[in-house]
Length: 65
Image 1 (cartoon, rainbow, N blue to C red):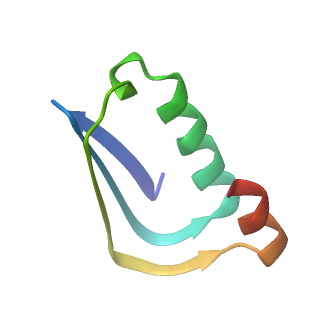
Image 2: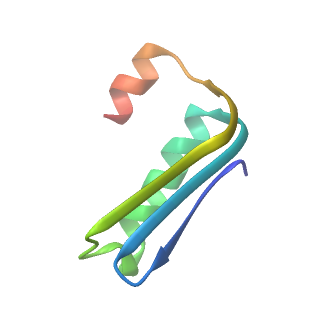
């Protein structure tokens, strides 16, 4: 999966690579919400320098928001 996350202490680190689809972002967001370590996070890092493209529509992006 080109998008993944890791929780280290109170920091959520999300990274991606290649072509990231809406379905992958949606699944990852659901996994994060259901992860017991996700509670009480203070910091978030998002690293997408390795992403070539985000394959999603405007409607999908609005649904995720």
